Length: 347
Ligand SMILES: [Fe+2]
Image (cartoon, rainbow, N blue to C red):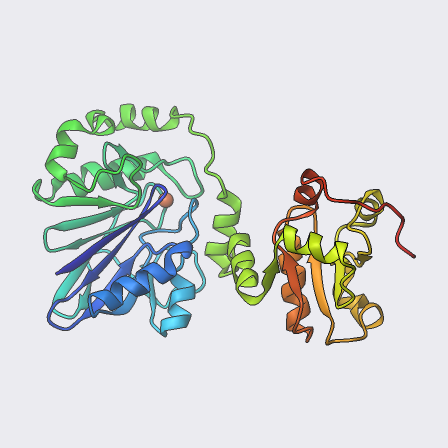
């Protein structure tokens, strides 16, 4: 078996490949690591054939659908998954063929209703059901501490204690552990009585994960996280630095049109000398009258340098092929002590 572990923040994904056939599966891919997965598969001469999410993630952005579209391969999840874009729904006790490897599916609800664990040879991919020294939480949507107790004590922990545990999260950079070690040392597994276990899980008082609603929304619908929208827009435009823009403003570069896309009040309070005003919210509707020449070199400016990227990408998409964005925003321009002009935009 060819095996790679990919970590980002506390999230873990795993690439598993069959040495004989070069078929591979990717478990719990995360949207910021797509290039890394593809590079790793290439490096090992593997072809990714299946994408598996161990459960509906509330705390990271799944790359499964995006990769599925790009590679034309299926997304696999447990049949209880509420996600609409699952191509192949799996049931407890089934197995997935990956070349000569077999991935055995175990339905282990508790962290979520659709949680599953996968066993491949001596490795057990536990998703968020069992973590190293911990378990998944049960207070997020579809979580259920009684179900988790059952999945752990009546299923997982009865397997061969020598099995290696590879969770979907690990915050202390430990590579893996074994079931036996977890049974002995994992503090949550010391509560072997159902009532005590449920009581403990109900009183963890964990803070909500960052991006909870955005992750659930995008993972369930196939929509794009905001970070992905921004990174796609970033790849579509080029940038000009603050210093370069300052030099061009000083020399009254007639070729460059600086377009301030902030709201009217922000523009009026102080903008780059000579900048025109067209708020991002009105860009598409007013662009024909405001910018009749599509050959203009337009530089978009906003407060922090993010909305301007989206505005420049929109301009490029509608035919302004020389639209660029300021690398930074008005905040950085002001902090650098560069000149400001204050005047209300024409109505
Ligand atoms: Fe999770």
